[in-house]
Amino acid sequence: MPDSLYAGAGGASDLHRSPRRPRRVAPPIVLRFALCFLPLVAAAPASATPAPRLQALLKAARIAVAGQVTAITPYDDDRAAVVTVGVDEVFKGTVPAGPPKLVSLAELHEGVSRPPLPADARGLFFLRPAPRTSFLTRTLPAGSYDELLPDFGAFIAADSPAEFTRQRGILQRIVKGISGAGLDAAAARTLTFDLLACDNPILVEDGAAGVADLKQPLSDDETQALQTALLRTELPERVRLALVRSVGDAKLSALAPTLRKIDAPPPVMEAAWRALDAMGDGLPQQALEERLASRTGSTRAAALRELLRRDGVSAIAAVGPLTISDPDPEVRRAGIDGLGELKRPEGLPPLAQAFAGNTTELRQAAARAIVAIGGEQAVSTLERLATTGPQDSQRYAVVVLMLIDDPHKTAVVERLGKTHPDEHIRRLITQGPEAHD
Image (spheres, rainbow, N blue to C red):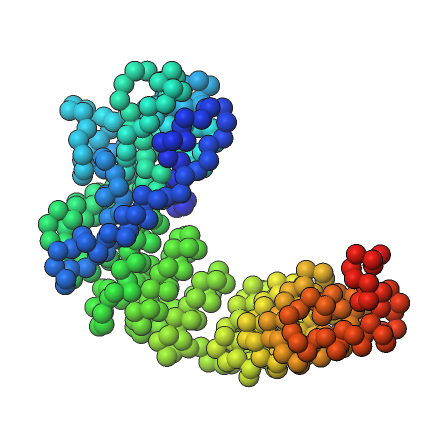
């Protein structure tokens, strides 16, 4: 399913600008503000707060409905449109009495980041009054209009009647919980798994937020539901990462076999390895080293990062060769950055080789890693690089030495200014970059 997010379309004040000029997208302040108050939803301390995004959208919206787009009427060469939504259920606010019950949405098509609502779109709509700008007043027929909230997920699409029914049931329970004493732990747990079973990735991600609060043991049905969700390859990477991290945070060891099955995309695979580590059930050393020999560069990079993160200095012998000479520059970059983050002098030898034998971009990354390690050994490494290897590499090593904030550099720079065999580099040191050709 496509990741239909309909992300923010700007606040009311933006519509006072000329309609022919791009609008600046307003940050989703309402959603962030509402999230701050989510703990107040439940009156009882034992009550849980699942589905944080849906709850925040409900709080921010003036009207929340389930319905379907029945008509789209463009105006002013499709710079604006009136979108008519047939309402099946009202969760918050009031809509004009039917039949049929309809709400009219004002939609701007210039300079917005949210795509227009498609014809026949069906799902959940979270609305606020549309601004009364001169452009809308002049362009649209007289009437009262609403618009989607600018927040992420303000329209949640349902691609089938069954999904539409599921969405309505979920929102009914959330509304009931907000209007009463919240949802007790059992109801919140059930809601979390119902969200995870949804087709729309926005709702799955909202369900992932509740996974970290699950307590062991899981029932067989719950285990199966999480296994299915973790292996849904059609979900956006962002959502899969949220699921994997939540399982790791909750230390749901029953899901360890499923986490080991995740082998793509590399960021999700890497998150699965970290979740396994959090459970005390990380991949064996041999399994990670085998992935260092993968034909896929992104897999090699992920294994390299995991080995450095998990094993530290003892991993340098395995990852050093990839940092120096892997055919994929992204793998070399992962090794360079990982050694820099390690901040141990044992990482300086492979970084020195990566510095001397790489492109300008990777040489700069290696320089940053060497500086991050710092200390007398890092300065000595840069001194060697300043007198060996390609001439452009030597010049750059000298520049790095001149710029770093390290007391060990002073004597080294002075010595190089007198003894370096290259006249241009000596002049660079003694007269500064401005005098160097």
